[in-house]
Length: 274
Image 1 (cartoon, helix red, strand yellow):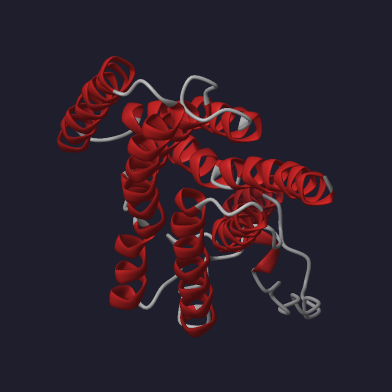
Image 2 (cartoon, helix red, strand yellow):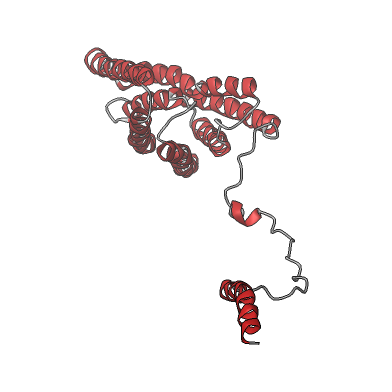
């Protein structure tokens, strides 16, 4: 009774952390929306997570593995969130990425349909259904947790953690740790293996982040003063004008010229009168 209570509590905590994990890429997708471009971001991890969520929802259904409602709820929520992410990624990708995503999504849908039909028609006990779907969950859960390896290789190559969000790595580590604990309380190997690997891969991401954080190019600050306000004000001040004789106006100049021209005539007139 006590182990079941502890397991349920750990499962609820795992649901909360997993919800945070599903939401942790929100800043990344907000950036994609603002830039209207996916740039060098990869959809691999989100495609793998989508398939993983579909498998775990199927695994947790009462017709496959009873008493696993906590597995169904969080993976059902994750399924919706990942679908939203992939829609955004698809909208802002180039034709090559769109084609690739379309092929992968169609393959995943056909695969899930085949699994559901095969399990429900050929496996007639909970134990057998749990075994088949559980093995698939281990395989694709491992793929999901290892999908950041492509991002990790990019980090090593570029010596930049720009495309490996720290929040996603931290929450992945906590999520894997929580669900591994959940699976060990009432041992479930199908939950233990992928989540144990998830802890390992997330730890590797955190180590890489610590190594390459300082070599990541810093973005120019957009919060500083306006560029014009940084222009140094000139210290030049005009010196006071030196004393000069007042300038003649055009009218006075013309008057002076006319008087000068009239002077000879006045002199001759005075001479005649004399």
